[in-house]
Image 1 (cartoon, rainbow, N blue to C red):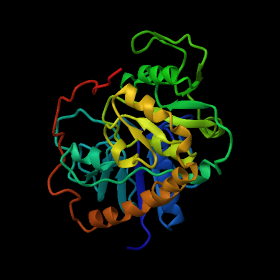
Image 2: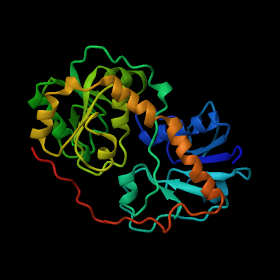
Image 3: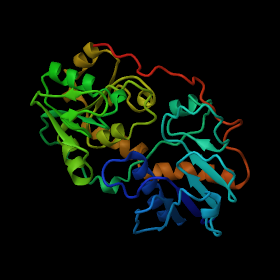
Length: 330
């Protein structure tokens, strides 16, 4: 397969102003594909910009088909597509969709568990653009735990996270939330050992994670993949979370501990300093860099260009009405 002109379709902004996982994922993918010799055009939200690839503003008033340049070889969409396109295409589904329709036969997912919940076996893990994270300090003294994610989403279980931190005696830094939240039910956190850093990105986020002993991640949904997990591991932080979604694929006993019981997570946290930070870091570099993501997409691109479907049948949600919150035992 020679060099391709690939259109990356996404309905968000690039680059992301702060944390946005999917936005960063498509950015890293485009950059890595260019390094491999391919040509990239982004079809993304108005206001996006990019210094290494052409950007076209997505017009939601027009059909997608009418916005695809003539010279594109392949469309890689990061949003579901429900209309025929004039070019070969594939789709990566990033979230936990509740849509009960059949998805396109060329839909891929972002973890083995994510795919299995739609009756598929086709997935590619998200990868980090490691150059944007710098070289971590793995021997520095560390004095707190951290939470990373959208704290306002109740499925992320910040409440459980705070409860673990308090009971363990460790200070907690919340990356991705504020002390007072009125959006998703009222939450006001008064404990001053819990510090709220807001929506952080770039050097500030890297510095905060690099000062942490571990990520607390007791989510109450099936996490599709969990960029927060691999970002934290990159900085040498083991992960203490729940065994839901993709987490058992990412967090083996060498890199953290999973349980939906607060008492068991607290017991495991007593050994937080015994995890090998360097092994955590190397694990990400060896498995979850953007180069791995791009390399794993190339065979899928080839199949699509050869007219082969990625799935034997259109993916469809196997359990259309999962519980709103998966079990968490205080």
